[in-house]
Image 1 (tube, one colour):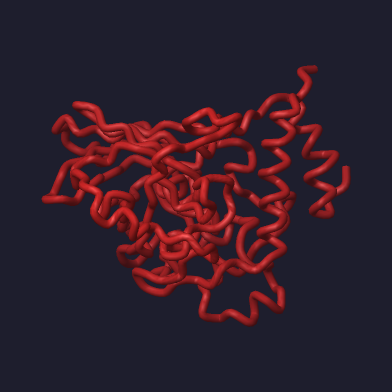
Image 2: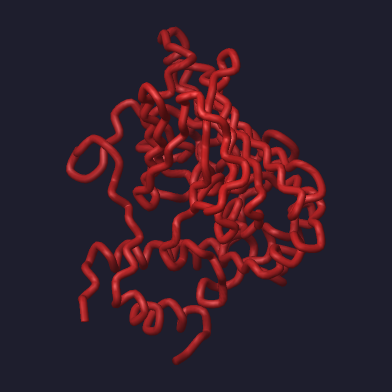
Amino acid sequence: MIRITSVGITMIGALVLGAMALAQAPAPAAGRGGGGGGGRGGILAHNPANDNKPFDKHDLNGVWSRNGSPAGYGGGGTCRDCGDRGYSNDVPPFTALGQKMFDANKPSYGRNLGSPEAAAHPEEHIGRRRAVPPANGTDPYQSCNPEGIPRALIYPDPIEFIQLKDRVQQHFEWGYQLRTIWTDGRAPLKDPDLPRWWGYSVGKWDGDTFVVDSYGFDERTWVDHFGYPHSTDMHLQERYKRTYYDTLELSMTIDDPKVYTKPWVSQLKKFRLIDQPKTIEGWNGLIEDICAPIEDVEEFNKRIRDPAGGVLH
């Protein structure tokens, strides 16, 4: 049997223990409407020291992060005005199918299901107040499946934007995953035969806003880590706007009539530019933060993860 490496143990342990901690601790106060509800850290997305730095509003290149730590990575909370770790607390009513899909998803993030803490926050949608231990959860990323979009955009770890002649690539540190947004003028693929984890995305400029339209998502991914569902018919629109040298804003809209009775607009999210991202031993760039499902993961789950959730083998 292949032996899991120390790096693999660290990665899997961080995933499980991080989820356990979030399932046992209250979530940050939920933002209402299109704004508010940012992280608990002291860092803001925009640093006034950069007020006079010139920038091209059509240049998205660089490493951007919503993380509240100075280095801009490490999981945890978001910067103070960057929005929280969910898509939005203003959730439209579900359709009958949407409610069934929502009930089937068991997240390990948010306030504990049935806890006094959950009962004390009725202003939060129930999706943020139903966390279970990871051993009892159904989070697809717990088994190292791709996060997909928009969930990967919301997670507070760095994303490198790479603008090329015919595409924009988003390289995510969490999972070390790559997404392609085509800008070569092709039409959106609205009803593909083969849904994909990252969907099919095209982008274009509308003035100073970069607009991305995506279709054809694999419905096994979640909208965010609270387990909100979507169908293969979801249309996701992202609108990016660089407002300062060091600040990128993102608003999103989900249109998925199979799951939600009306379009769902996201909370405004902000990213801050990380000029010199440093990782191990001063090496500049993204950490290779891969969830690697090698054979011993099953044994790790039986010995460590499952007993932590009361599941004994």
